[in-house]
Image 1: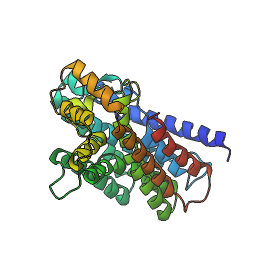
Image 2 (image 1 turned 90 degrees about the horizontal axis):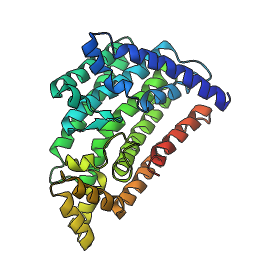
Image 3 (image 1 turned 90 degrees about the vertical axis):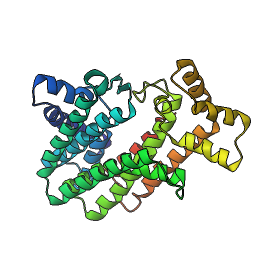
Length: 330
């Protein structure tokens, strides 16, 4: 199979996913459809369904995706969209994917309900794919919620804040990417061993992806993430660069500039000029570079999970995808 053939197959399969996704985010009244299709219509990377389609090739190389693969890939994207509606309410995010966040146009209650509708529609798709897929999807949704809850509670006194944060990322982001890979492998006809390998790969690139976002939130103009730079800072969301600053403070290795930066981070950041100053200084700090390197380590670890898979165009596509996760930071 040539690289062009793989790309053509994936593009054709993705068109089917997009069609089913358009159908799945609509189907109610015009008012409801406008809300439930808001984020889907805004675009997005569609990384999760694409991962499912690539992993399906590990079991059915050079073949178009089966209907089961298309439905599984779409269900994962619907689940992801559902979490975005909920996350934006919790974070009071002003925008998502370059458009106003749903709660700013329709209010918190309607945004939450829209997320619930999308998860229900994902569950309906999964229901046709067998008990094993149903169970895995339910466990994934549990992990998504537990990760979000743990983030709100924060680490306990006996927990390392950095390790705790990485586990939250694995639950909130890695678990669903894991599921995308596993669903693609299962429904593409790959062995359970292959599914386990790509699931581990997916979880690890999920962590790498989120760590890369921590960097991008502080170093981009918002066109990459679709979010206003410094949104996490304003909302008090603790990311790895902040944790690394606090780690240095506790160890007594944080210099005067770093201490002043941390004090400003802990102050009122609703003033645009102060926020811009903090974002600029933090973006140039060594903790952001350290975060960038840790993200690259997680991406490399994801690729390591594929070691036992035979060489193929699909495997190379997975390796390339892992690299793309960290190239976004450049």
